[in-house]
Length: 457
Image (tube, rainbow, N blue to C red):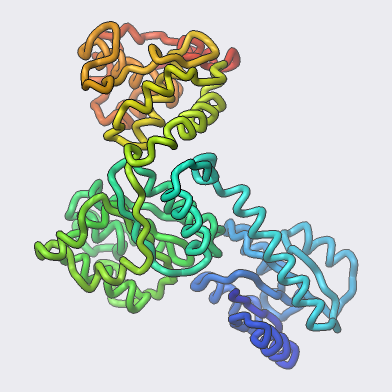
């Protein structure tokens, strides 16, 4: 654990630092609030021992700054003044504990460990989404993966996630972050393949005012934004070669330089990369740097496709049913055996993401409390369409429901719905007219009685 000791009395500060180092902590020290503020802005710590009364910026002011920045780092306040009012104020401002000088170092150690442990438990419980918290599996490979993630997460090692599209690489990356000591700091994702090649560098590294035409203001890049947290580089195999050199330097030197800038900015960032490409083959083809590959491939976790874990299809189906039921207010409570058999006969080329979308659609369109095989429009084991209206009708029905869901999600805001669907507003308006969606109501798609407002313009 990394601990920051802040006290203006050098003898006390040094004694605390020496004691915690003997107890196995990595420590840093600051002689006042301003010096501590600089360290906290640049580095990541598991906890802070903070003196209350200091010249300049005192402990309470620094604590308020931390909480104002959204930093929930555990703080144990210490003071030579045993005023109960100060203790109450410190606790209200977010201190985890309060100790009056002089104190036994062992007592401080107990308080620090307890405060950090409590914070870790609260953070893990609050930051893990339903998908990230979900670890039920009947597949032995997935059990090994979850166990490995539990071991890897608290470390700062770079992780490379591989697997087909839709296998849950970003969900797994968020889980690693949420279980790490950086969990109260930013998780910054960027899909390299989704950013135009000419913009990747400015998105990652940021730029100074005047760096290029249109750069009217300074902009922090995603690497700098993720400092002290986690940077998730999705589709890392699509990174342009000239930027691979720069990323390698970031990993090695922990420093960046904005476009158009001359100064070097230190960054403390954990990198998790993901790809559905064969990076070894790209290295052989000369499309990916071998030295960067080895830097990223420290801990490698391969997520298997859903077709290789058919025993998990019923487990995942029931999980997504619970998630979608809560999200939509639907009355659907179970999936019938015939529906589960139908799902298990399907190969799911889109993997877990496809299953999630499929369950969401079925829940929204369901008439009763149970999902049956007829509620799922998908190819059967022979490859033919398992629908009553044929492939064309199924596609149109799916498009209609996707538009309806997007409109509901954005409360009728058509520009935002069009952006989510990846179509123009004019195309969306034509589709609304074609499918007669001018005034669909939430109750039409299984929403609860309190969410039945009409779609606006």
